[in-house]
Image 1 (cartoon, one colour):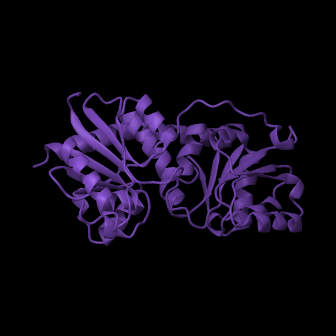
Image 2 (cartoon, rainbow, N blue to C red; image 1 turned 60 degrees about the horizontal axis):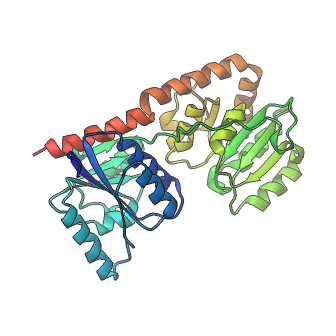
Length: 347
């Protein structure tokens, strides 16, 4: 058994999802830290398990059942006691609620504004945005035991698709937006803005409850021939590399992880001043911010960058610099390593 700080990373998540994907990325990245001895406790998921084991991480499976699943709770807690970790970091509510205090330091990582009933018994908390950390303090948790550590993007090298993909005219600028087709994402406002933008094709990657109504809206606005509804895509990072702009028109965007991805992929970025993007983006430096629900301002920002490609590319370069300095795999991994060491050294 390798020596070092023994860390259990406990996730009781779904088969796929943003937190689940980042769990795998972070645990694999921390495998490069020779001072950490990590163990993954997670639900059965062959793809996740294979990725973790290929990074050299031992994996144990648990059901993480509900309150009445007493046998599973006992099995999970006995596994923790046998392993005797220095730190247990839990991801999301189910794993956090199932993990007791013990001789280990219990760290809860919060990627949303969760109800804190599953979290208050921890020794330390990690919020992935400053807004989440401020929420934890407002809810009565001690600020000195809260750390803000963001997410890094999937830094996998991806092939860039041709710009004429999806029957797109090769001579037209490409705008990209992605996410669940839900009212919170503001794609209806983006379609309205498109009526004020000449000669640009919108790639809209996503699926959800508003799929049919957004297609109907595009017909009513007369922009159907300039919108490509791509459905759910697993290659949004590659699509970003082909686009002239990435647009995030959300009414509510708590995390802004898509901003970090756009910075890494080097695409000029426009977003509404919703919570996550508004916290991350320096307006006019590494992206443009527009008011929520303002299609005119959004159209003006799109046109500004289309008409000034040098400005757009300079903004994208500054976005990549922001990513390298604050959100890269190396930066975020180092921050977690420093947190774990500080917790173990703390009396």
